[in-house]
Length: 107
Image 1 (cartoon, rainbow, N blue to C red):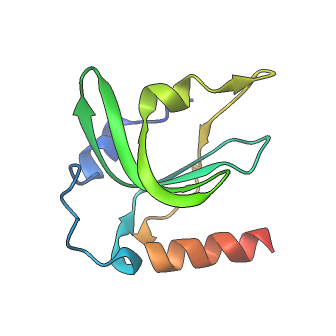
Image 2: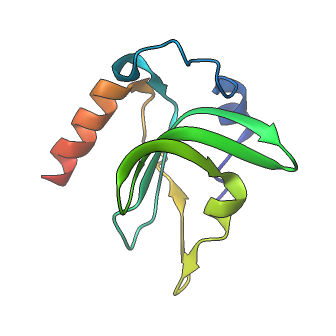
């Protein structure tokens, strides 16, 4: 599965472009997840850097935190043939709504 499509790339604000936007109002443009674990990445920004594509967003894994992660990093995750996937049914929305929906789906 292609994680970063041309359409998604075109939609994403550049890194640091939404710094002044309150966290709850930041738009989330994509959701990546690892199907055999609890890792989920919510993408709010992204830019090409040093031959890779760097994302900024909210990560749920060992911790729940905002941070940077790379396309190469996501593409290199493979355990027993399972790889990171992009949620094809994800709908762009403000972080407060996206995380609320995510938590409801998990309960």
